[in-house]
Length: 259
Length: 112
Image (cartoon, rainbow over all chains, first blue to last red; front, side, top):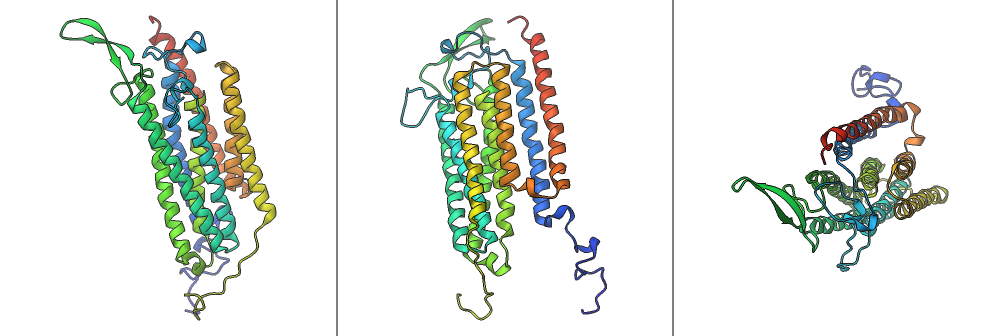
């Protein structure tokens, strides 16, 4: 193959169109990951834009902040919805639990970037250590989310009254609602619960996929695959995905929980 | 497997202290901005000012995550703009739809 023509896979490094150069100065895999993440960002943007449109259509709660009660007539104040913390039933701690979740995800992003740094140095032991911390952070976040969803679905102690038209009797009735799902929602308009499940659910699914990918990377590191390959670029590529998941949470945290 | 004749020799470099320190600095900034967000959440009443502060803080956090953790700030400029410009249009779309929703609310909920 010493005299192979330049059009085969063994093209010389100077041949631009046969893989001899890297457009945009990154490897093929990293560029594809960036393009995937851009398209994934469009999907999340679609959810957040729809949420923004629907939310701004609904009336906001007006009046004294402390006098807030749940009603299906106006959009709820988020910090009044998300104020529960495990083992502290009945103690209002607005946004504390979701703040803890944010902190966990940021920390797992830091450990991921430390794994990438260790990969650059071919330090297998350090990559293993930081990947394990990243996986642990991801699992902790998912566990927190499972608790939060359970609490959201089960509901509070006090039911919210909702006006419902009874077709049999032809009169409006007040029915008590506890908890939330895709049919009823005690915290506010139905759309509030629907967007909660769709946005945090779609993000949670990304975290779940990320944990699986991180485990795969950890497994391949332990078996020495990347060491034999001579580089740890897979850690960087999956790292990009993991940071993206953290990035999306930053936006969800602001637009769903804070604003 | 260790010591096998066909195993390549791996040279492990020492930790890049300067780089690691920089990463922890970014982590500290992200943590500090999140704490500041909590401060704002419990001191200001909801309104355009509060929303604007949250949006600015979120963009700061996003810039650090994308720029430093995802390394985009240190990539080729064309790659950086290929990501930022499409997202800028998406942000425009978000602003437009939120404004649209506010206009629609004046029709939908006029009788409430």
